Each structure stands twice: as C-alpha cells, then as structure tokens.
Image (cartoon, rainbow, N blue to C red; front, side, top):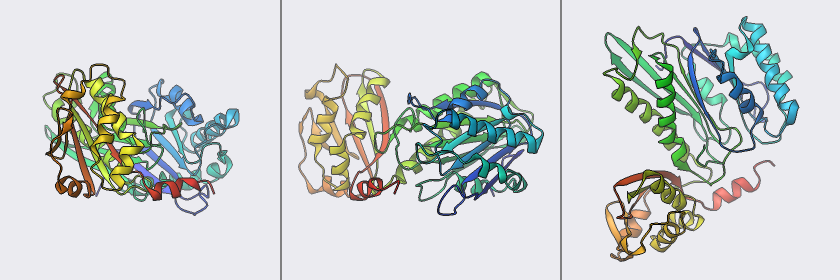
Length: 393
C-alpha cells in the first residue's frame, strides 16, 4: 500500500469532465512543506501557473489542488479570479491561508474554469482525504491518459524508513521545458531547501525535459516537490552520506514517470530511447537527440518499423550543432551497427526486426568528445492524427 507519512489524498468528480470521471484532486500535508516547482517555458502561461509562481515564493505550501477538464489557460483576468476563488474557498473550509494551497489545472486551452462548481464540492473533496487514496488523486488529474502514472520508493536512513512518491499525468502536447504534463513529488524526508531545489531541478532535466511526444510545449506544465519531514528526524544536506542514494532514487522516480508518459503517448505504438554519445558537450548531445526525437520523418519511420537511417543522419546534420562531421557519425539500432563513419555498414533484415519491437533504442556516436545525453520519444502514426484532429469535438 502506498503511503507517505503526513500526506493525505482525495479525488472526486464534480462535473468538469463531460464523461463524469474524476476531475478534482487534493493533496494535503499535516505540516507545511519545503517546496520547489519547475514551470513550463512557454511564454503563454495558464492562470494557475501565474498564481502558482507567486505562491511558491512564499514558502508556505501545505496542500495542492488540481483540476482536470479545463486548462484555465488564455482565460484572462477571469482565469486568475477563478483560481484565486478556489484557493479562498479552500481557506474558508480549512482555516488555512489561500497561499498554503498550490493550484494546477489541465485540459483544453481557452475553456473557462467553473470555479463555482468546484467550490460547491470543496467540502466533499476535503472529507474524502485519506492517506491511502493516492490513486484517486492520480485518476482525478488525467485527461487523455490511458492509465494513471505513479512511482513509489522507500529508503531506510538510520533507524527510519522514508517514502518518495511521484504522481504524474500526460500523454500529448509533450515537449521539453516542459513536457502537457503535471508531476507532483512528495516525500516525508526532510531536506535543506537549497539542496531540495537542486535535486528537483536535476531530476526534471533528466526526465521531463528529456521527452518529446509531438514537439508541442504546453501552457500548464508544472513539476512541484513537497517535503514535510514527518518520516523521522533525518535532515539531508550536501554532507549527508545517503545523498547519492537519495538523489538516484528520486531521479529513478522521475524517469519512471517520464517513461510512462511517453509510453502512453496519444496514438503511440512504440517507445524509443535516443542516446547520443561522443559529443563535445552534454548540451550539444541533447540538441542532437532532441532534433531526432522531433523529426516527423523519423517518427513515422518508427511507426512503420522502417530502419531508414537516412532520416536519422539528416536530422543530426540539421541540428544547431556546428562541429558535426558527417564522416565521423556512427548509428546503431540497439547494439547493431548500421552506419559507420557516415556510411552504411550493415544492410540486413536484422535492423528491420529490431525496429519492429515495441521498445526501440537508437544509439548515435558523433565521435567528437566524451559527453552524452538522451531523449525518450514515440512514433507518430494514423491514430495520433485521428485523435488530435477532433480532440475538442
């Protein structure tokens, strides 16, 4: 059973979704938390992101309220008002301050948020809070997701066992900085705040900023981490012996959730990891991996299980990396080398068989340095086009 000491969850249906499925979720901590958030780099920002950016600076967060069914983006001052009215209602019903609550929304852009409908159901949402209801919350934040996305780990530090829980949503409009996704990370382990921020930022870079489904960046993307320290008396600092193990565990949770988002991609049939080795810097390796992951020609070849490496090498060459030498590029599908020094090395049915797998690995060596990076992506096919052509209708 998934539990994080001091945290409770609820998820209910209030009628924001036409389907009648759960569409309002709440995470509540018994104590105020150390918190850090990472937001989309899109210049068009949803109302909850604008409000959330102000709230996170106050360092008084104790709870998270999330609605699905409406992104509350591009809704002007009415959208800001709607978000704040929900926070005020939560304050009235709990005796807490509006800035103790962090807001998130997900759904269709431009659709007004019916805050009156939400506020009418706030007492019910609070009453349903349980420490075992993380799956109810996870269901309440989904939109086009086919499944909920949860990752939970435990670590023993000293005499106590601490919990790390990540809950995310996302399946489309996924692109770095960040990927339409939301992620809520919770732990009952206490951290030095500056270190906690660094860990969340790093885990985000290695996960949600390393995935691309369709190259479209959302207006609502948010990753927020909360630490309430209620699992024991340990305080993690840069000098803590367990720091490396803790960081690796958190990175693992974020990677798990990012992978689940890509595997749940709208219309997707393939999961693909693109790794670029031999780059002169990690940032340039990322640029090359990202260019391939967003290539429609590559993504459609992936859908057709076509080992057309020409689409890969063309994408490499069209990236904004100046030092690339086409005569030094090696390309492999898994461990099977198909291009050596920019020229076809193996022409075999083995490559096509590897491309037919549900999970495909593309490995590229630029042979120009010692740095590497990766992207997680998916194929684009008929079902993606069909789904997104009538998403709002």
